[in-house]
Every structure is written in structure tokens, then in C-alpha cells.
Amino acid sequence: MDRDEMRDRTKKFALRIVRLASTPPASRVGDVLGRQILKSGTSIAANHAEALRASSKRRFISILEISSREAAETLYWLELLTQSGTIKAELLTELTDECSQLVAILTATGRTAKRNK
Image (cartoon, rainbow, N blue to C red; front, side, top):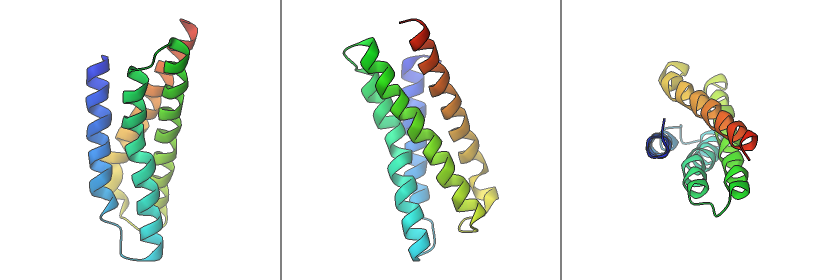
């Protein structure tokens, strides 16, 4: 997968998260979980885009690691949304799978970049 494809993929994921964040029930739990997933889920693409514009390899790796951590955090919030019964698990299956794939891709890219320093 090239840089443009990954940039587009993370952006599409962010847009799906934006739509998801408006679906939790209007409750304190729904509000908190919605805000948390909105922050971490949209920051994956923003940090990835910033990493692509990094001025050095070291900066690229550093920002890419942030994107990877945000993806892992988003996966956590997705799990919490389903396990708490806030949103039905079957509604989040594809999104959770995509998030797991993003975690794997970003982590592998970071490892490769470190190895090729």
C-alpha cells in the first residue's frame, strides 16, 4: 500500500468515526464514549498526514508512532462501546476490523522505518 492509499484509508476511517460518534444514545456514557472515540479516531488520519510531511526520518517515526497509539486507543473505545452494550457489536464489526488493520499497518510501518534508519 502506498502513501496516498494509506492517507485515503485513514481519512475514510476518520469519516466513519465522525458518523459513529453521532450514534451513541443521548446519555452521559454515550456522550463520553462518543467524544473519546471521536478524538482518537479522527486523530489517526491527522497524525498520519503530518508524518507524511515530516522534515526528517526521526520526526516521521515519532509522529507515526502517535498515529499508531491513537489507532490502538480507538480500538479500545470500540471494544468498550460494544462490551458496555452502548452500541450493538454487529454494528461495529467492520469498523473494529478496519481499526485492527490500521493498528497493524501503522505498527509495521513504524518498525520498518526504525529498522531502515
